Image 1 (cartoon, one colour):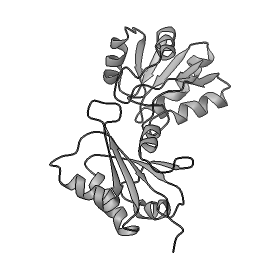
Image 2 (image 1 turned 45 degrees about the vertical axis):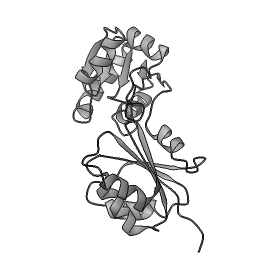
Image 3 (image 1 turned 135 degrees about the vertical axis):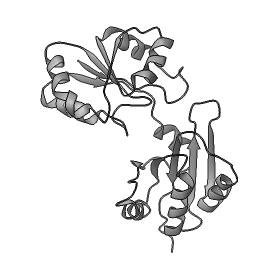
Length: 225
């Protein structure tokens, strides 16, 4: 059995009883960064063996891991924060497990995009999740597409690039389009800035530095003339 287990995105108390039980019961926990994951496991007194599984080694390890699962080993996959497979490793091993007819399940749990879109104050009955934008090639084309959508879209961004990305968007869209920028979700200094894109840029530019993981929610394109 392969379990995909979401982990806290900030506050370590955002962990479920079921997640703790599963991580105690499996024989191996596949972790994006074993040092980061060890802090979480130590807090909950989980002594299960950790094994590295990340974007740089997943292609090499999948065949052997699937073989172990087929032989009857139970494993859990976790990422540094949030739900595996959502802008983190996970898709490849899930696909391989399905192809090998290995039983799997994903526990419900933390992910940054849902709190961010709910706290944005923008319509959230329908939205587009983009994740991280391309760093160079294709970024402008992708932004133009996203800004044409009628519903809000969500992107993840580095604190070092958030102002630059917002300024690029402001060049491509209406100046009164609403945006929301959330950072440090579930942590002590959690914050959400809301307003027009120019207002949010102006607020962020006042700051000597910006810290924390960033989630940007941009309102959909209005059909008003």
